[in-house]
Length: 292
Image 1 (cartoon, rainbow, N blue to C red):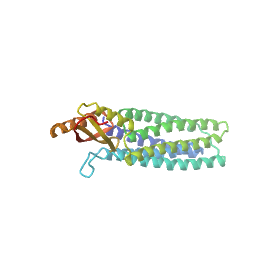
Image 2 (cartoon, one colour):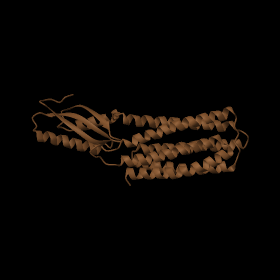
Image 3 (cartoon, helix red, strand yellow):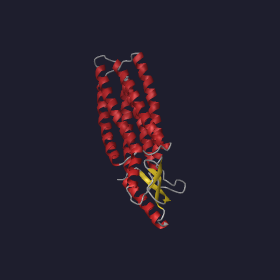
Image 4 (cartoon, rainbow, N blue to C red):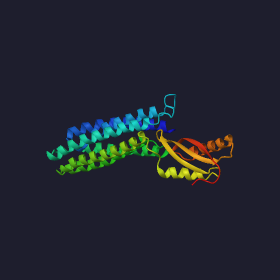
């Protein structure tokens, strides 16, 4: 299964799972007046949106290059992950406000064993989705998969604390419920900001990591025909990059031989470095010794 097919599957499973969780969390949360459970329900609503954005972004990104988009549609993954991050930030602000109000006004939970049941179902469901997303991410580098994986993991952690707050309410300890809601909101906000920054960097054409650039320089310098490298710049096309570099070769080589060397280097770099999608090598002739 290729990266686009598996991302589509992750997105669809997320939509189905989160709709189910939203319904049971909202019903039990409002009946029991648990702020932490209501916060969890709001988070599930955001998760549905995130899974939907994953499916749409993945569909667009899977489209091949055309006359209007010469380097494909890969950046769609980052545009839609940006939408996901913004939704997470908005939801976290709402949860934070409601949870602070819960602490100030000392809202009490109506204890119910159904709360415990919902928490257990949520943890099992989200843990399963997390493990599946994590397995998919190991095979395919995709920020949409990463966003879903992190979201599922966060939900597992948040719901675990929600379970604790519900258990404590059995002993008339209610303040912990509001604090859990605050903690959930902060965690969602942090994750949203992290995804936002990663998406923003790609959309703003942030260069390839310097360590990978150094590896490429070292690799190109290993060719005996290469007398030096002037420099390299990279442009993200999505999860991969276009690399453009200038190399120096012996000026006595004929044009055909020079371009043969450039073509070989282009193919070798693209095959060796998984972060590179396309390579453009410009040839400059020199007369004698290697350039440092």
